[in-house]
Amino acid sequence: LLIFLCARTTLENLATDIETADNGTSSFGKRNHRVHMTCKRCGNRAFHLQKKRCASCAYPATKMRKYGWSEKANRRKVTGTGRCKHLRKVQKRFKSGFKDGRKDFFKPLKTKTSAAAAQS
Image 1: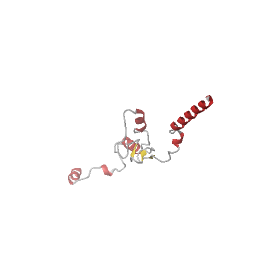
Image 2: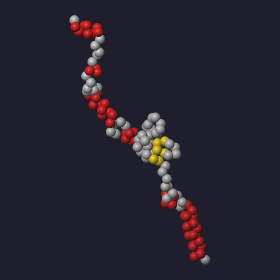
Image 3: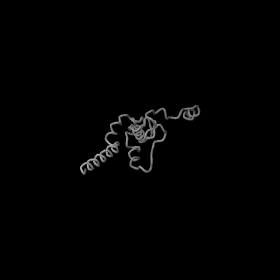
Image 4: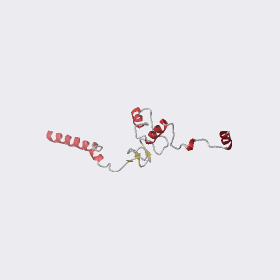
C-alpha cells in the first residue's frame, strides 16, 4: 500500500510538471515567421511588418527616434559615427572658402556705367 501511494504522488507530480512546462523549448519551435525586417532608413532589422514602423529609428516618421533615457544609443547614432559622405565634401569646400573653380562666375557683370568709368 505504501509503495502504491508513493508511486501515485510521483505520477501526480509528473502530470503537473508536464502541464506547466509549455512555455519553454517546445514553444520556441513555433517561432518561425519574421516579425521585423531591415529598415530602409537605419538599416537595422527593426522594421515591424504588421505595424509598418521601425523600432529603432521610427521610420516612416520624419523625426528620428531618440530618447534621453538611452544616452548610449544616442551616442551610437550621432553625426560622425558613419561615413559623413556629404559633410566631408562640405568641410573641404569650407577650407577653400567655397570656391568651386569657376573664376568668371563670381566676377561682377560689366555694365555701361562701369565700362565708362574704367575708360576715363
